[in-house]
Image (cartoon, rainbow, N blue to C red):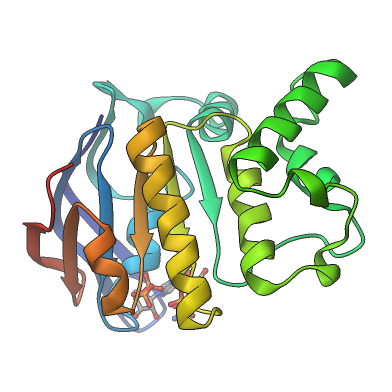
Length: 228
Ligand code: ADP
Ligand code: ADP
């Protein structure tokens, strides 16, 4: 599904050139669940921004389902991003004065769905994450784990090919963190959603099919954890 070939990425300041991604070769098949680990500053954010079509200035090739998307226009790229990838963050990134329903509906707003189509889609993903009864609540009325479930529902709303989760359990206690990992695992196994998961937490790794370790912008380890 995804093929990064010989990706190099530089940040140029006035005085120095920072080489942040070094000869990255990374392929991912549909249905994989890949943990990405590495120290702060090692290039994890830059890598996932590249994978998620947010960062498109790099050397090398990014093939998505065999197509080189980076040569395409900005408009088409943002459309592809919208339909292909869902993002989940450490701090949930929900809008506080929107209800759960409104937060999850947000990525659909300009897709031209009718009220009924929208409602059906929103309620389906809320049911999937176990929050069908919380649609009219506001984020502050929910626990951290429930807020992260809302964020996961929002990430799923456009039926993405893959999800990028940046430290999704970083703000949660161990028990809640395990619950969230079980949910990701279920989405991965049952719905074949491909997941990239940036984490500092070694306890997250056993849920994944594969572990990729990064140091100083280079992949230093890429191994199978459990069979996909
Ligand atoms: P990580 O997510 O592993 O902490 P990042 O990808 O955020 O690593 O950063 C990798 C390196 O690139 C770091 O040295 C960081 O300071 C630098 N960096 C990240 N974004 C920028 C930017 N927009 N401009 C300049 N340097 C950046
Ligand atoms: P994370 O917590 O994921 O490691 P960072 O703190 O590394 O994130 O970076 C936060 C944001 O700041 C990112 O968008 C990154 O691209 C940007 N950034 C990081 N380092 C630099 C830098 N040296 N110069 C400019 N922007 C940077």
